[in-house]
Image (cartoon, rainbow, N blue to C red; front, side, top):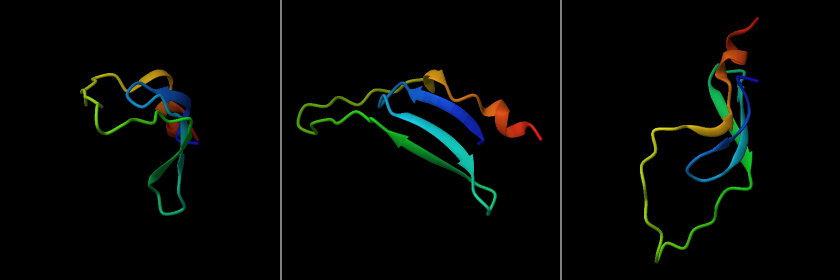
Length: 61
């Protein structure tokens, strides 16, 4: 794993990140927010996660 389990602020997705054999990160997630494009208002957030997504675990070993 390159980042621990966590929940995104913007879409509420529960996810974790892992390193591919090619050396880049890929995210696996579920439970993302479903929106109706007719009345959804996009907002910008400076926070990445409500909790989790500790990327320091990927720096170990």
